[in-house]
Image (cartoon, rainbow, N blue to C red):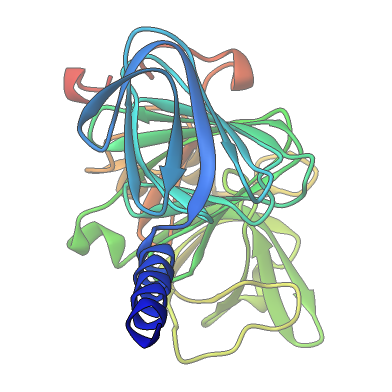
Length: 302
């Protein structure tokens, strides 16, 4: 009897150990054809655990996560899934109902700002990623948590992380305002509001300026700003009403091209370019209707 009891106890311990060791299920995946799950070819559907690697085949593929997020991966897309994020390494993902769930690509985190936010994240080659907000808005932050862009509903931005040399500089354009002794600017491309410090700013309040500077990581920004930029160059390119400022013809021309210095070496060949948090950003032509290569893209970025 004692031996029988010990056998039952041993079986229970083994069963409990197996249950504890079993990885937690984070969601399910369904597809119209075959796909690869953790290196194995799977037909139609599968169960997802933390860190699962999915590579879609030629059909459509949908992911339903236990936390509520819904993902659709285009043909040929690949990503590593966790309960709170996907590391997209190839292709395109459509995110729905993803509040609290990030799409990570090229070192950037794309975060929906509400439960109703729906967005399309598209890796364009190995250097650029495009974020299109279909409904709701999205925040894009770099690996250090610095806000790179706010993508509003109905808009799309292309991003390209810069080399360490270029990433050290910030290039932004917008109307300089003043509040309680602090100077603020909301970038026209990324819609990121920053506090600007430097000399001679008072005279340019109310003007559209192009600011080149560096991120001051030791400073705390005033309320309403996400970061402090120590300006090394402030160029007036127009007035807030849209008229050209006196003596600013060259500056206006530079702004129309994203700024000669701002555009050098950036790699995104579109009209208005900003660099925030070490990442170049540009509005894609046609907003959500944009498709194919951006002007000036190399074949590698397509």
